[in-house]
Amino acid sequence: MGKRKFKAESKRLLELMINSIYSQREVFLRELISNASDAIDKIYYKALTDENLTFNQSDYYIKIEADKDTRTLKITDTGIGMTQDELEKNLGTIAKSGSLSFKSENEIKDGHDIIGQFGVGFYAAFMVADEVTVVSKALGSEEAFKWESKGTDGYTIEPTEKDTVGTEITLKLKENEEDENYEEYLEEYRLKEIIKKYSDFIRYPIKMEVTKSKKEDDSDEYVEYKEEETINSMVPIWKKNKSELTDEDYENFYREKRYGFDKPLKHIHLSVDGTIRYNAILFIPENRPFDYYSQDYQKGLELYSNGVLIMEKSADLVPDHFSFVKGLVDSEDLSLNISREMLQHDRQLKQISKNINKKIKQQLLSLQRDDREKYEKFFDAFGRQLKFGVYNEFGANKDTLKDLLLFYSSKEKKLVTLAEYVSRMPEDQKYIYYATGDSIDRIDKLPQTELVADKGYEILYFTEEIDEFAIRVLMSYEEKEFKSVSSHDLGIDSEEDKASEEETKDNKDLFDYMKEKLAGKVKEVRVSKRLRSHPVCLTADGEISIEMEKVINAMPDNNQQVKAEKVLEINPSHEVFQTLKDAYEKDKDKLDLYTNILFNQALLIEGLPVEDPVEFTNNMCKVMVTA
Image (tube, rainbow, N blue to C red; front, side):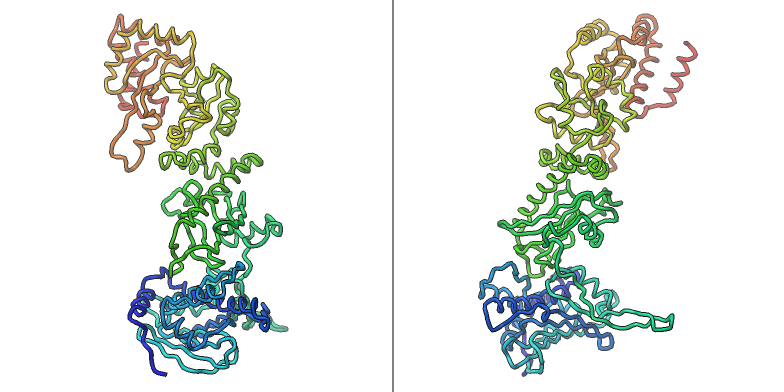
């Protein structure tokens, strides 16, 4: 028979597919294997309705053969085969879906949905081959036919000989190019790698002759020999009953998939049979990947469609705050585009993601409740990400995440949840108090904590940069507002408050003078309500706290320095206060000296830099000389 030409639109689509639809050339093998699997599925469907046809699972397989001498790769299946007319329709007209037509005609729904888009994915072969030959014999036919094409120029179909039912596709690989090594698809290790990556869970055996070695009798020499081996595992773990599986099975799968070098703290096995059917296995890792908090880290779950890998990293399946979760989702109901690499509709993914998000939270709460030590290990690795999730997207996820947070407690001397904190609050305590600092040890020594601690109230220690930002977004927990120990109004009524207000009024001139000397550095100087033993501290009025000022100004891309509205607070019970009053009455130069020293001391307590270290040390020396 003479050469036939592709229709004009088919020719343009073929050119597009060869050059740009697929992002990776290696997927050609996935497509051809998927089509072979579809062909075997069709015999299975026929056997369901044709009593003269039996389906013996062991008779059906897919075989891969590479020949380096002829630069050919052969993919053989024992499926339903194609007639001359079907070769013309399926391979001569691009985007004709033989599988989908078959499915709609038979209307069989038993869970074995056909994935393949025969006549679309098939043309991925031309990404690596400059000549493709298809020999096929259809079930029930005495004749076989050969379809052959060198690409966009067209194709031929002619009768041929074939003993068995099924299809045999032979690719004549392209010559190597400067930046493309086509011969790699003839290498045994590379073919096995691609099969395991994309087609490991195809339900029929994918066979290949592999090289093995053995010792010769009475000799230390090894000889190589070829042996046929099934490359794919066929039955995916996520389609097995949970009752059949042990923790060790899940851990082995975690290692096999190279999700991490650690052991997972928790696994989640989902089998959902609703509007969208899917199975999923998710893992909460024990350790943080080395690049987790870098731009190089890519979140996402593996996405399968009926056992065939579609995407290695489907970022839409997990939100950023759960980006540490590893695993996969396999669904029979995904709407895929022609390259099988992109989803046509994200509604399905959103529905799956919503359910996964809920399940991850449930499992984390379960871990927190049942194995606190493990949960704290998890939180040490990924707690910062949860806190960022509270802050991110203007707090859209704060209700999802608030119960997962842990903070160090001044009373318990360990990490506690917000629920645990609130459950211990005395009746007269109005707020959830927190203090910020670089470390637990530094916060322990903060002067600002004295009043709250003296009242017997618990204080949460914020030691990470994100902590206060997250809490500002959260605002409250169980109707209890958060309050920094450095806030102007601590909500603690006491006799000392009234005395402090009187002292501030009585010494207004002194404080105004000190404020003038610290012009541009502090908003106000006043008597402190919170200090007990320390002479001085800094607090902040307004939305920006001193700790937030430090964090924002340390950001590399920050071009505008922000400043908290600082207040210098003086302890009226400390002997330094009397010294300041005496200096104001008798020696303004000394007061200037003391004001500068106290302000710089307060900066150092907060971990802020002293503006002029030389002046500060000289002032300290002056005090020592005149003391």
